[in-house]
Structure formats: C-alpha cells, structure tokens
Image: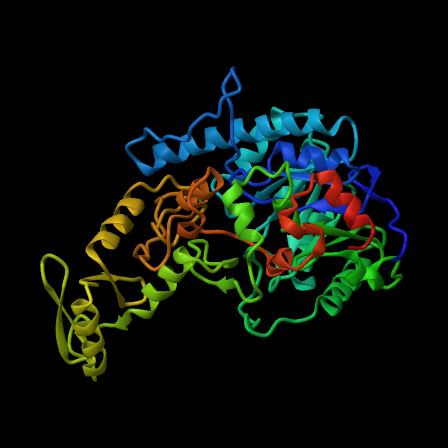
Length: 465
C-alpha cells in the first residue's frame, strides 16, 4: 500500500480521508468532530439537524402551523438551530485537528436561507460546505461571503463545466475541491442523468479523468478531486494515489462511518448493516425529489415497489382500447381501462386493494383503504422540506405548488428519515446505504459484531484495508 500523504483541504493539510455527509441527523457533530480529531475532514449534515434546549435535551420536531407555508418556516427555523448546534459540538470535539465541513442538498427546502443562517451563527467553526442534489450555482457566492471553501458534488465533467461557466469562475480561490460521486454506487440520492442507464454502471476512472481534464482547462491543476461512492478500502484505489493524470485525490467514505461508536444511528440499524448481502441495496426512483436513490431493500421499499406494480393507465372518456368503464373513489366517477387492465384492477380490488389513486401520469395505483388514508394524511401534513416535492406537489416559491397532481407512488421523505434516524423500526422506514454496505458482513474488521470508534476506523483505512 502506498504511503497516504496529507493533502491541502480548506486551508490546512489533513489526511485525504473525508466523512461523507448524511442528512437528517445521521452525520452529526459527534461523528464529524471525531473524524476531524483523527486528522481527516469531518462532515456534519445541515439537512434538518438535531437541536437541543438549554439543558442539552433533544428538541422534538413538532409542527404547529396550519398551512404548508407556516410549517415550511418552522422547518427552516429548526434546521438553522440544528445546524448551529451540530457545528458547535463538532468544533469542540475536533480539538483543533482536521477540518470541519457542512453538507447540504441544493434541492432541500430553503437551502440558501439555511446556509446563511447556519454560517452566520457559526463563523470560524466551519471550514467548508459540500453541496449536491441539483446544480448548486450559488453555493460559491455564499461560501465566499463567509470566507470558507465550497465543494460541489457532481457526477460528470459536463456538470462541473456548467457550474464553472455559470458561477464558479467568479470565485476560484474559494473552490476547495470537487466531489465526484459515483451515481451508481453512492448511497442516498444519486446524480444519474437522463442519458445514463441505471442498470449499466460505468467504471469511475475514465469519468474522473475526464473531470480532471476539464478542470485543467480552467486552471484547476492542483484543486483536489474527492472520490465518493463505492469507496470501501484504499488498497482497491491504490492506482489513484499519486497518479499524475488524476492529480490530487482524496477519498470520501459515506457508508463505513455509519458503523462506528460515534455514529448516532440506532443499534438496530447498526446490526442490520452487519447482516446485509450483495444485492440488498436497491437503486430506485421512488424519491419525491425525482432523483434516483440507493437504499436497503426492506418492507418500506418493497411496499413502494409493489404499489407501483399495481398500476394501470386510464382515460376519462372512451378512447381506443380504453373502453371498459371502472368506478373510482367515493363518488364512483368513471374512468376507462383496457380490457386487460380491467381484469388486473378487479383482481387487486378482490385482494383488498380497493382504492384507486390517480397519479400525475394518468394512471391508477391500487392500495388498501388504510394505505390510502396514510398517503393522504402525509400529503396534507407536508411541511415543505424540499424545493419541489412530487409526493405532495409542494413548491417553495409562489404559487407554492408544482401544478401537478400529488404522486401517491412516492412518499414523505422528511417523515421516514426523521423516523429512522430517531430509533424507528428499520424495516418500516427508508434506509439509505451505499452499494458496498453488504461488505460489513464479510470484512474481518467487523468480525463478531465489532463496532470501531472513528479513530479505529481511520487507523484501519490508513493501512489500505
């Protein structure tokens, strides 16, 4: 294994080992502070982080607003308080070592407002901001205002080219690095474009080499590229280290930090990670963001998959093969199905899936009355956690709706991520994970259920294993 030399990140030489940010209280002040204290770059999530009262007790996230807009403003307030709280915890824990970054999603609700709020309240504590899930043009300007570094997350040279030409060329000195996140292997939301096949993963080397060539054209020879997604151990990436074609490289670990003593996830979640098998991670497009995402196959995802399988196209009047009438809803309004689809619909109704819910694509999905009631309740309780949500049709700018039907094939992402990150039953909630999570079960480092501290994990990573 080659020697792992320090690299310049956010104004200081650190180990080229970066904790990947994971939202809704999964990468928090304790995990990121410990990572920085061990000499790397700790990353806490600014996506609806936990906040505490004056006695150190967790402040429950409870919404009192009667409208989505009122709850949206409550969510922003919670997020800013939580981000400040986690930054302070991480700063104290790092003990002057390493660097501390905050991760946000550009498509989360009021990203700019939350960034300003947290950075105003933590000046001198945070050294950089990583940002993906969309095209974060303004993150450069915001970071420069607070004299910190920015790290856009991209999945192609083409994406970085667009960001640079539109905005980043104005703030080159604050560009601390570019995160290349493998869109097939990373956990959470993935940056697959419409031109890329989710079933045909491409090796990252050529894509990262193309990114470096694009960066060199812009004079960014020495700006680090951070490889993220699919990184388990460095011996598998040894050819990337000190590679003159790739230039300065650091490595981001998103999945392995989940299984540490400092990780705030529940014991049940940690034990589940130790039992995963290859193929247990599912790249899907159920997220209300519209992005692909990677999560563990469990009852939650299985329900979404089966729900979408119980789906037929309809018309509101007889058209072509759609000539068979079918009653929908309490008012028994008629829609028209093909004879083939009518047979399926009748079978699903006989099985108890009696509610046909309309989707934005002029289809019906069939669910039980209990499921229909829960879907409707979740849509009504929307707190506007995204800039635009397919599930609830919320949009954070006027007219505060996407103008499309709310999509019952999706789900309330804020609800399920809050549940799982605060002790909810893991099989019944969305459980994000990278595609290498199955390796916990076979890696000898975790034999007999061993859960390391962050320092023990980083010491292990430095050996290449």
